[in-house]
Amino acid sequence: MFRREAKPAPDAPAEPALRNDDTLAMKAVHAFASKAGGLGKESAQLAGAIDDLAAMAERQAADFQRVVARVESMVAANRAITQATQGSAAAVDHARTAVGKVADGVGGVVDTLREVAGAAHNITQIALQTRLVAFNASVEAKRAGEAGRGFSVVADAVKDLAAKVEESSKLIMSTVTQLDTRIEALSAEIRADAGKPSAFQKALQNIEAGVQSVSTAAEQNLAECAAVSRDVSQLSGEVDHTSRSLRAASTRTQGFLQLSESLIETTAECGVQTEDTPYINAARDVAAKITAQMEEAVASGRLSMAQLFDDKYQPVAGTNPQQVTTAFTGFTDDILPAHQEPMLQLSDKVVFCAAVDRNGYLPTHNRKFSQPQGSDPVWNTANCRNRRIFNDRTGLAAARNTRPFLLQTYRRDMGGGNFVLMKDLSVPIVIQGKHWGAIRLAYKF
Image 1 (cartoon, rainbow, N blue to C red):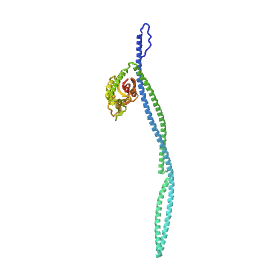
Image 2 (spheres, rainbow, N blue to C red; image 1 turned 180 degrees about the horizontal axis):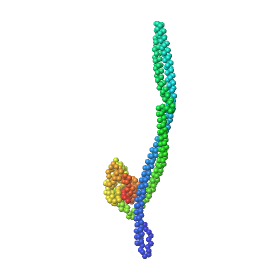
Image 3 (cartoon, rainbow, N blue to C red; image 1 turned 135 degrees about the vertical axis):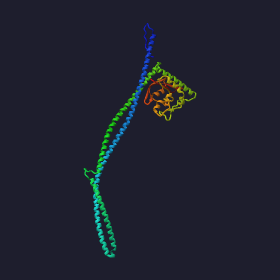
Image 4 (cartoon, one colour; image 1 turned 45 degrees about the horizontal axis):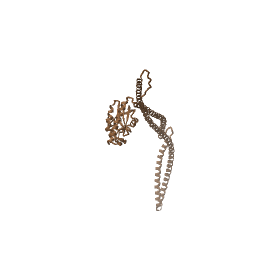
């Protein structure tokens, strides 16, 4: 309590002046308490807003990192296209050169075929002469009578062979003539001047033009993607810097929030009646009753200390958000509603009253927040809050506090992007000298 030195006038008693000073001091304390409460509210709002911005900036930073990766992939793909089109252009040029060589080769084939035709013609002439000689020899052998019979047989065989050779040679000459005509035409087409390109040359030109178009587009895309990549990388760095700055600001704001909470607690600890006093007294009272009933259960053997302090949380299958149970969940379902439900009638500002263990596990909530889970996780988040672990800053601080009471200000996440600005009052629960957890009483400003 603040007090000023009183200097009463000689004709006035000192006691009324002291009482007047006490009244002024109390007014100052009450004003201080009111300002501290307002500061806590503003601090909680500011901290929540900065947390939201920091979380959004972190998401944006992650998104930009993914964008950078994709743009870099596009750059790599366009670079590969450019390299491939350069290779295609070289292949087209090689094909053009090869066509020229084919033209020369076709001309050589024509010359060779003509040489073959000439040789076949010579063979035909030789065969004709051989057939005439064989015919004459056959005639002479027949004139020789019996003595020339053997020679006559040979002469006939040579005559027949010459006839067959002549026939084959004529066939070769005919075939060569046809090939000569066809190949000559092909050679003429391939050797056509640039003003009258062949269909193949036109196809090569079209391919070359298409390849060049693709190459130009790929190079343009490469340049644009590289520019975008630089811009996005720079923007990503700026977003990442903003994210770090906001996270640092969030840390500083949390410190400021804790200071404002300490101011609220200090005024309450001084015994000054504030708007929080009824809630503090009620929370202390219910914490004492829960403590007594838990200790009685242990003493009677209803459950052991090991069961009461069990922290092997067993997931409940098919729950979203995840719910868990422990060895003491059934016990708290039996005893806690009788203590927690009446606290909801303390004021229309009260939102919930629930006991949590030292890890933030809330086994048994108020009935209105203990609905069976459905298929919608957003609805579950708001209405099925029992058997869950709340290990956020506020939840863990409340669960692990060992001071007579802890008063915090925070934004409660109700799911679906909805938040409620609240005060969280917690009083520790200690069983046989061992800290079990706390009773949490949350109410609106």
